[in-house]
Structure formats: structure tokens, C-alpha cells
Amino acid sequence: MKLRVLGCSGGIGARARTTSFLIDDDVLLDAGTGVEDLAVEELAAIDHVFLTHSHLDHIAALPLLVDSVGAKRDKPLVVHALPETIAALKTHIFNWVIWPDFTEIPHYERPWMVFEPLAIGSVVEVGGRWVRSLAASHTVPALAFHVYNEDAALVFSGDTGPNDEFWRQVNGVPNLKYLIIETAFSNGEQDLAVTAKHLFPIQLGQELAKLQREPEILITHLKPSDRETIGREIEAWAGRFSPRVLERGDVLEL
Image (cartoon, rainbow, N blue to C red; front, side, top):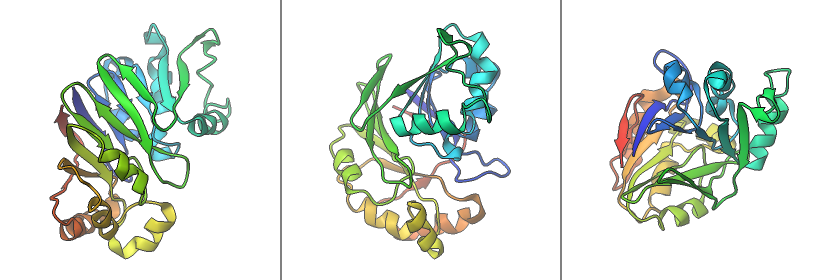
């Protein structure tokens, strides 16, 4: 199993793409703007999308993805998300005002997209790979994901502030090879981070102190306007860990 980083930025700009990870060729974790760099054939190969939450930087490419390749596919794209996230997408995106409702196109009996609700603890198998939903703490209902096969596992925090339940679940993951965790803001913007329920480097160090496993720590969701400062502060506050900031185009193997 491979995870390809399509986007890992907390914003846009030259070469900056928002959160989206491609597992092998057919599963997306989040659907940020990084999806838009895929070729049409690659878009058409995606069968499942797992969404952490409803914020635009994590769902921006989903409406265009379905529209671009729905007619090329012989089965619907399955979007897995919390019921609250599904409701937000139906109300605010796929509402015939912002974008067509592809759960009814070309016909409600033959849709290009279907929603499958998740709950914390849900496990979905996709061809010998499993995706388990974990707790996240954000300004809207949100999930983290534990992705694994028979050999190894990774955890993606999604957008989250401090969350003891998340660490309890992570510490129970066997064969944890990678932990992808967000750190969106610098220490100088910690008030904003707390309000927005994102991590900043001092807080990242405090959270990592709760980790009882030894995975590689990979940092995502840095705001591009402050990326260098955040990176330096992560190095200073990471404690016993040596996190690496993810880059668009990175490939992780499990």
C-alpha cells in the first residue's frame, strides 16, 4: 500500500495544494485542491473518498471530481463521512445552487456519487486495506483516520486541537509506521490556533508527549504564509521526536 501526498498545505499559493492523500490509485483521504493535479484517467480510478470534515480546504475538489469523470465510470463514487459532514455537503454544496446534486445525476437510481455515513470507530475495508475512523476535535464535527493493511499502519489526525481520546486510540494502534499530524499556525498565532482548534508548535510538543509509539512523525497543514517560521518552531518544540514536514509529491509505503 502506498500513500501519495497530493496536497498538504494549510492554504494555496505557488505549488501549495490543500489536504488530499491518494492511497494506491483508488482511495482518497480528503479532497482538497491537490486532487486537481491528477490526470483524468487517475481521477476516474478513484472509487472511495474518506472525508475528515466539511471545511472547504478538505472538500474543494470533490464537486469537480464527480463532474469531471462521473460519465467515465461504471459505478458511483462512494463518499464516506460523518452524517454531519454529509448534511453540510448536501445543504451547502450539492444543492443545485452551488453545484448539482450528483446523488441524483444522471438518475437517482444510477447516481454518479453516493454517501456512506461513518461514526467514530467505523471500519471500512477496501480491497485488503482498512480505514478506521478516530476521534478529532475541531470547530465542526470531524474525524481522524487509521489506515492499515496486514503489514503496517498510519494515522492521519485531520484538523484537530488537543484531544486525549485521539492519543488513547493512537497508542492502541499496532505496527504504527507513520503519524501524519497537523500544525497549522506559528506560536505567535496561538490565540488564533486555539480559537480555530488547530495545533501550534508548543502545543504539538505537548500533544506528542502523550504518544507511546515510535512512528515517523510527519507534519501537515502549515499555513503557507508562515511556513518557514512554523517549521523552525516545530524543530524547537518537538521534544524527543524529529518530525518532518510533508511535501507535495511525497510517497509513503506501508
